[in-house]
Length: 252
Length: 269
Image (cartoon, rainbow over all chains, first blue to last red; front, side, top):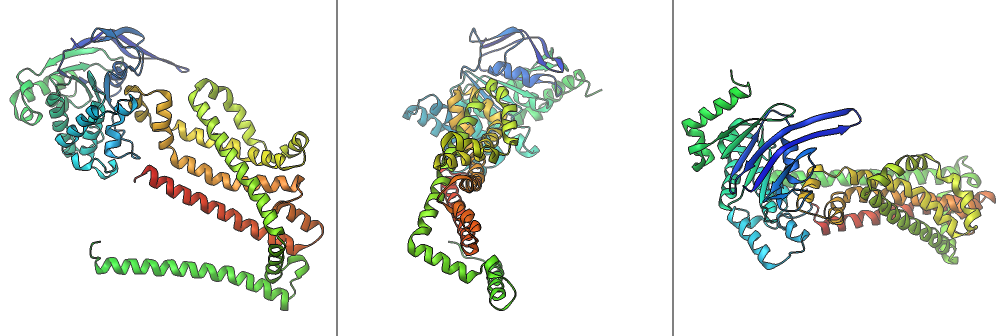
């Protein structure tokens, strides 16, 4: 188990009062696994991701990464925000090389790896371009490679496709999934899109409305071996989709 | 260079014709104004003693340039303005950085800054004179007082509106507060900083002239006060025009600096 969450609660305090965002959330993530957190908007799934990223502290419970308690941002976790959050004043390369720059690791080895990643995923000739010159899908790939520059143990994806149009979503989902697989990464994706979660992940954790609790866990089973595109054509896809839809009272 | 299409060439030509017409009309407007002024003085009922005239202003400027007076006064005012401008911008940005850094300091200082911002800074002039004497020090203090608080408030506001997701990204990459400042907050606010510079050029002139009104024995502000006291309107009007030219020139320099910085930082799109 690379990541373990046990009895996690989160209560926000403000002048207006208390807001309970999460209640007693426990689950684990295996090494190399792709897990989706699925739930209605406002169910606290983004808060959960921020807890895992160390951006916020839980009110109760703890999160263990490689058996160590997460306390603040340790740089071991790669975080992909909703929008790509690329820096427009830096070139593609300037963005991608941010992590080694911040760590004072401007050495040929870490740079060579990033150059390889860029050219491997079709961005080699865009290294010196501005992010503004790239399509939404390419920007997401740049954002992912920037995160990989920090060699994270765990990748957290906070609805990274929500700002893209429907067509691009499909192809970017495919791309991101392929990169994560090829690099042998462990990932947690937050989404409110049932189809996306079934197409991309090995396991789906469904959360209730606020305060978020674990409602159910679904294993992709034999879908695990398939690509997102192949999954969508598989009968099991519809079955899992249906089951989750009913649980969330979207489907009757 | 790719071959331009006919439509493109036509459009470019129409644009340059339009630009030329705008410039020409503007020139005629200004020229006409001065011409009417001059004609009014020579053949009409405009009193040159009170209103001066472009011809007399030209002669005044020429004589002052010959005697070296012009350069001396101009130099004094420019030195005061530049000193106040640099101090106000640098100090203002520094304070904004401190307040960005510490949330506690920000909460403590916020109402104080707002009160200071609302205070008419010219009211402080006499205090500066008592403290620092009737010299350049007081004038620079005046300039600083006028530009400092505005700089702090506008730069701080820019810093605080830095994109939350970009900040979170920096945090998860393990960036220190200082790295976040230099790698994200400052580059993201380059245009805010440039705007502060532009506003401060104008404010520094206000401060310098205001200060000279109160204490000085040299400078453009001094010339205006002195000229009006001895009723030499030629001198007053000439100085006002010179002031306009100098302020516009300094603003122009900031625009050039901005363009250079943009090129250097590669601010794209």
